[in-house]
Length: 499
Image (cartoon, one colour):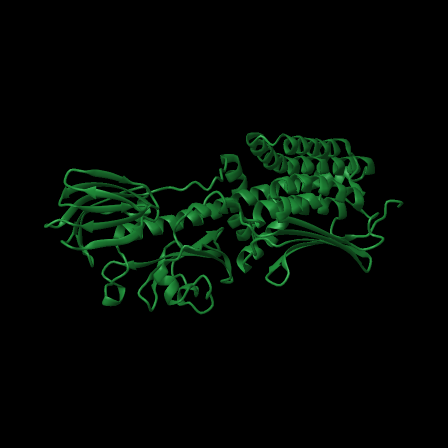
């Protein structure tokens, strides 16, 4: 089969079958004299290339390589590639392409899968938010393909920012999700097939439904490429994608959808275990002493998990001081670190006064000031009479640490942390503000949803601590805007130490 392109043609000797992955495609490409394959990305495929005839230049991830007959190359998945024919004859290559498998990090044991098959259909469409959150770091952040994941109502859950300059110039789907035709959800005739849509600018987008237990939880779309044989003068600056690229994109979308549904199976099995655990706890709650002991132990475990994150960050900073030879700063930082861990290991109470919590926070900020110096400004606005209220032990410091870990970026700009506490009716409103990087609406929505998903990391640990302390009589919310910077707001009941 001959596939014609703007730069020449491909003679396919063997074509990969999408449903038989992992498989491979074999073809002979002919790049005409004076032509070039424009810069493109090998989405989800790896390639072996052998030069049969001709001379030219490769750019592989911006690295220039001169090529000639009998040379061979291995191209890793997701590299940026460009080819130029500099010879007097067509540049011919033997190309072997194979879709790769991506690991989402989610492993399901056979017992879990069997248990899942025996349970009622417990998963609601909202679980797709937890699933996307779970695989973002392990899988989605490493993918160079421009993609968007939607829930069942067509609302965007997450969207990559890796759209091509052509795509961005025409309608910028990352900022115009409501008006860009590529972002409008399409109907599926078959729930197990990839559909494709070509927009008015000639770019093709592929979509695949995310199906679990016969229910469509959402959709994943991606690609935004110029498919072979769709060639006009208007697209001279776009790479004319071969069928192997199309197969790689379809395979990648299916793998992402499968990773999401695998998490749903895991989540459903976990719900069974949690239900059994809840039944056991109901019996335990009949004994008030055992219940209180259980809460104390749970808080200690949460504190240990929080301290685990903090310890590694702090030790890295101390290690840097040791290399610079600043012995005075190194000594002070070790003393502050010792104070913090002595405090966390000796305090058995679930609650402390706000004053004690602020003193603990200031010890931590002393460590940060050793790093940032005058570039770090800390402000307090604590309403009179609120110093002595009871608050959960060690819940403000991890929120502030989150600003340093995720909010502040390396720059010469002044970094601001502001802590405010005031009474609102019979509640205490505690706000932690930072002037770091603002969150876009999609990320903000995902982070707020992740608070109560019990993901075991980040701010969800603080939410778990507040839930243990106050049951449902509290709230925690994150906002981010150019007017108010990024704020974590916590509202809790007002309790005083003397009570």
